[in-house]
Every structure is written in structure tokens, then in C-alpha cells.
Amino acid sequence: MPGDDDLLFPADPTTRALARELFGLVKEQPLISPHGHVDPRLLAEDAPFGDPARLLIVPDHYLTRMLHAQGVPPARLGVPSVDGSPVATDGRTIWRTFAEHWYLFRGTPSRIWLERTFRDVFGVTTPLTPATADEIYDGIAARLVEPEFRPRALFERFGIEVLATTESPTDDLGAHARLAADGWGGPGGRVITTFRPDNVVDFEFDGWAANIARLGELSGEDTTSYDGFLAALRRRREDFRKAGATSSDHGHVTAGTAALDHRQAAAVYDRALRGEADAADAELFRGHMLLEFARMSLDDGLVMQLHPGSVRNHNQWLYRRHGRDVGGDIPQATQYVEALRPLLTAYGNEPRLTLVLYTLDETSFSRELAPLAGGYPAVYLGAPWWFLDAPEALRRFREAVTETAGFYNTAGFVDDTRAFCSIPVRHEIARRVDAGFLARLVAEHRLPLAEAAETIVDLAYRIPKRIFRLEQP
Image (cartoon, one colour):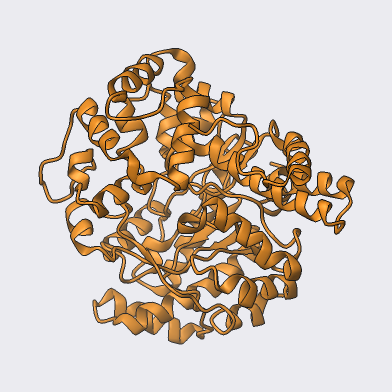
């Protein structure tokens, strides 16, 4: 089990010593988590976690997709079905199945995350094998009934300063209201929301028409017209701001943006309401709405995050059986230079806009994204996410973008996780990788140690706090 203090540091002794020193400066820094998918009800209700399998395996599609690829269907791992098909319900059985296939994770970040979670969160140091599965299961289960292992207690122990969750405009934000009542949410709170409007912007989203009706119900606006739709979005954005939101998030298929005039946009929206919009209409409207959201951000100050490049539900069998967000999505090549031109032409030099760009296509880092961030005041580079959040990809990110964008046109690390207990180790890994990268610059006499020390604290703490506007309520 990885437990070495020099985990992921360079092998060269001189550089390793520098990395160790730099990491020591951020090891205990509070965690800023400005983008993630932890269910806010977890912290609002603060109920004890269920069994170890339902906490650590069932909701983690990084784990379940790997086993599915090796012939272990998600149903055997307890992943809920949407078609009524039976799934495993006994936590110990699920855990044993997972342990039998633990070898599949050799060399993966999932192995590091889970082993460090066992050790640092639950005090379990026994290596996971089929023979030790029950011992580890029982050890974690015994911890989960203790008050110190309830969600809010762990939140405090993890050193999380701010945690952003992600909700859609059709969410009533009830969990966030409860958190605010308890002093945990709202502006300046420790748990805040993020405005994610994909389910009302994307005509191809399942249940789009019903979502539009729900948007009208929650906002009090008439969403049967394009003007009413825009008014409803503005009103909901204000509701989200009152619940602490400092950013919006947009998970479009592509990075395409489009500058439609009001009449054109209304016509496309009306076609969608009649059920007559095609795929080209859907892409055009998604791109147009990014410009609309940029305009709204100039008024309300929400930071824009754009997460394009995922072909959602590529595995249709998995989607039909288990629904969205269970590991059936696949990255694709993504073009940014021309795709973003309409938006950046309109607002790329606007000091009131902050646009954080992410990618699943790392070939675009040095070719497109770093030059864009280095050339437009509004643009910042988001951390490698999802399929790129492994240590090697984090290193390649720094190597690819630093020469063009520097450190200060990047937006800091985001853990982007649903797995609450993995938040600390994900930040730890990012900080270790940055320590190693900066140590190499120092060892090569490219950066003084004092500046490297300042930079690593900026990357880990100050930059994400500033860019995501978390410094003041």
C-alpha cells in the first residue's frame, strides 16, 4: 500500500528533497473544492454512512466501469438500475466481488485514491486481497457507526474550507437551504452550490420538455416563450447566488459557441418546444446559450466553467440499464480555437468575465488552450479532469501549458468527484505532482526556491480561491 512520504516525488535525490520541502508548505493547507458532485443531502442530513460498499464502491464509476470492462456487470456491484432489473444488495457480497478484482487497478490512480482513503480516513493498513476483504470491510464498518465518521465530522477533519456541489435549475435547492439554516451554506458558507443548466439548455437531454416546465414552475416565469425562458434562467441564477453559488458549469458535447440574434434564437427554441428541433438545432442553441450565459455573468458575476468533449452515454446498454453518470461516457477530440471564437470575440477581453476551460483532449493543451489562456484576459485553464486526473496527466498538463500560460493563467485543482471520502487524497496527489514539477524547475536553476515556495501555495490555495471568487461572501 502506498504510504511512503515521497509518493510521486522525482527519483533524483536532490530534486526529491526539494519536492518534499515544497510539499510540506501545502500539506496542511485548507482544501478549496470549487467544482465537484458530492450530493449536498449528505451534509445536510449528516446521517451515518451506510455500509463500506455503498460508501466507497457503488457510487464510484471509476471503479465500477473497470470491472464492467472485465465482464463484471454493475448490477453485481450494487449500481442501481433504471429498468427494474435486479441488482446486488448485500454490501459484504459487493465488497468481496470487488476485492476479487482488485488486481485490475494496478498502476491506476483509483488504486492510490482508495488505498490512501483506507489508510488516512479509516486507519486501515492491511492490503486488500480476496483473503482480507472481510477484515477490511469489518474495520471500515466499525468506524462508520462512530460519530467522528459522520459526514460533517469528516468534512472538518478533511480540512475543507469550501465545497461546491453541482445542481441544475430544476433543483429546489432544499438541501442547501437546510445547510444555510445550520450555518453551513449560503454566501460565505462552507458548502455552496453551482449552477449547471445543461438539462434545460440541451434539447437532446432526456426529459427536456418536462425540465422546461419545471423551470417555469420554480421561477414563476412563462417558459413557453424564449423571453420567458431567459427570464427564468436569470431568476434561478439569482436563487443560486443566494445559496452561495459563485460559478456556473456547462457540460456541452463540444466547445462550440454561436452568436444568434434574438429572433433566430427564439425560432430555434420554438421549434424545440414543438418537438421539431434536430441535432443541428440542438448544437446551435447550446452554442448560442453560452454567449447568453456570458452576458448574464457580466451582470451577476458568476464564473463560467466549460467542460466539453464527453460523448455522453456512449455505452447505450449501460445507459438503458443503469442511467446516466455510471461510467458509460467516452472522451472525444475537441476543437477550441474556432469553436470559442464567437464568445471570445464578444467577451474574451472583458475584465468582468472569468471563463475556466477544461478538456478531455490533452492534445489541445499546448496547441489551443494554453495560447488562448495566455492571450485573453477572461480565460483560465481548468485542471485536468475525469480521464485526465491521473498523476501522469497532471504532470503532462504542467509541462504542456506552463511555457505559454504560466502558472497564473491556470485555475487551481478541482477534484470533480462524487466520492466524498476521496477528496483529501485527490488534492494531495495534485499537490505532490506540483511539488515535483516545481522542484525540477528549482533543480535546473530555472526558478528560485523562494518563488517556487510562493507558487505552490498559490496553486493549492490562493489561485482557486481568487478565480472562483471565494475570498469574500
